[in-house]
Length: 391
Length: 162
Image (cartoon, rainbow over all chains, first blue to last red; front, side, top):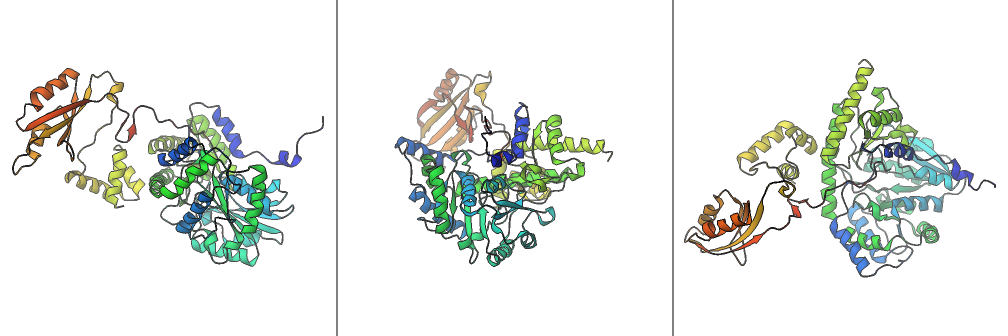
């Protein structure tokens, strides 16, 4: 039998997370700081809307673009929160999580050989999505000294005449980095000058601390060259509902909708009804969760620094990204030994790109009690390692 | 929200946080938080630190009753005098003045049904200004102080996700 597989797919290396997950799942009593989703359940009133929609037998397809009512609420919300102006008809597409929207945006725009700039460390799906379109991922290694923000100089250095897209993943998973308005203005200027489209993955936009999220799409002359990706998973604690969206210029959204129509048909109907309520009635819930994450963020940052690890202050998402180079271990060694010796699972920074080497992603979407116990074990581990090194 | 309210809301959910931990979580100095807590204790805003226990999961024999009480308010003293007489009694867990169809809610902790009945008939009803009582026994506690008692909160998330 001839090889049934597409060599391009076979060639994509499996996510580093997957590998680590396999090791962890064999350890039954391990505790984890490795989860990339909220510990909160979806607020009850949102769940209730989903339940009600089922009771009313709303069990059919919606339009390919998604419920008009939901698209309208998304436009209101984006305007209210981030000063983004979109039309519900034609400029919004409801997707199966933000991750589908990422895939669609890349597939709709990138032709074989075209280059897509991806700052890393960042979410695991951008690079494989680009490879699947036969585009060429161009990686920018973000620097700790810049607090893992993308600088204009780094962007300029990565641009060639084949550059088509820039993926802008902020607030960032795994680093927690946030771009300020000034940072974004510089990036926007370059994108306009070099005629580059921005795919801005803003799934963590609700989770910024002591500063407000700014969307690059709200800057002058940027709307026409931005696809804004967002969703309900993080801010509204709705990961399992699988619901996200993309907003952008009509011509791009139309082509994304075409792929979505053939591959997916429409996002889950129950989730869409629940999401209408999420946007109308959840400001207080979101604020409560944000305040709670902020407390834990400060706690984790303090503990990490107190045990002698350097860690820049993350202002977004729910991750801290401490540097473990002082332990003279690679991220993977650190993760593996920490798991074996202290039974704590933390994702190595390298799961998010080579530039994550020397760092660990610590999720603080856990209760203070869980964080306290897990960080106590990390501290033991780090102290033991110091003795081992004769420090 | 003021720092004071932030402190209160945080320890309302978890009284075991040390002043140091609270300070870190709220982005304050330990001294400032400790001083604020001492002040709140002195003012009686913080009036105690207790443990939340689901006694139904222990061997302890205990019944809870909610008693609706109608009383005649006293000239010049309103309901405070009768409320004081009731709240002085050790078995009384809580006393609230209510709007609506009756005046006082008395939460009572007893060791048995008989024991509660005894309290109501010989102590409470016997009080001069008490007009009537209606006693409701608690059959099952589902949720108390914001905590669901009937099912353990389990983390159902996978250990590692991107």
